[in-house]
Image (cartoon, rainbow, N blue to C red; front, side):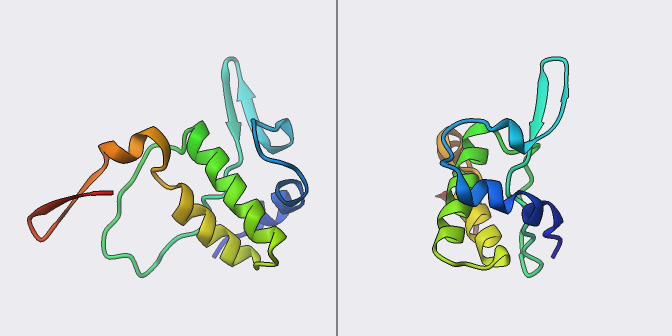
Length: 110
């Protein structure tokens, strides 16, 4: 599992309260568009279904950063922190109620 970016940003994530966009996590900026690091590096290679989104939004980014921080502060490995961050933040926030998964012909909310 690639953890290169997470290893680079882990000290910033661990040592700072996550409540807003932090320019130390800025990867690139062009005009009005800014790209920040969010800990979505984890890939579940055993997944049976893939749900793809274009990119995490601000809410998902902040939720992932906060969960990664909590995990790191509690002594979790980088891999465990990444897994928890992705599980906690994926499709979180206002988009979650709009996501429905069809399983065995039955519609179930996320």
